[in-house]
Length: 120
Image (cartoon, rainbow, N blue to C red; front, side):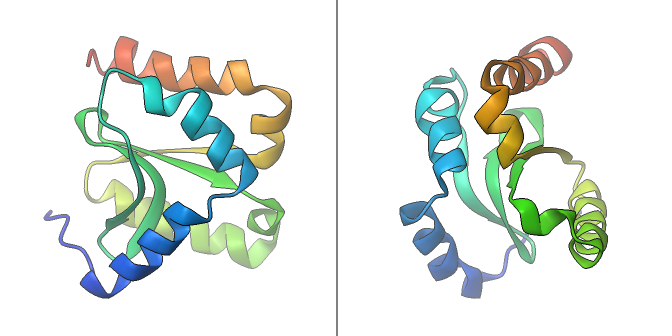
């Protein structure tokens, strides 16, 4: 499946890069930015904008705020994850709470997937 993206989403993605949530900012500046692989922020993939994308590991990382725990949002996230999975992508979801209270654990999970499982 081709990862063609909706060019109309590019301005939104650029705006989201400028206005990251505190948890996205923390994960980016304090971990992802220094990884020895390319990590893209607010990347357009198909019809969605994902928080972080590591192409070499076929990995999408999503940071979910409290709205993602409402029933409708959970259904939408499941559809989104299935869509991204159709591109062969693994989606890892972490809550704002995870970032705030278990940052080292989140970083270890990402590191383990990228470098131990995917052997990047």
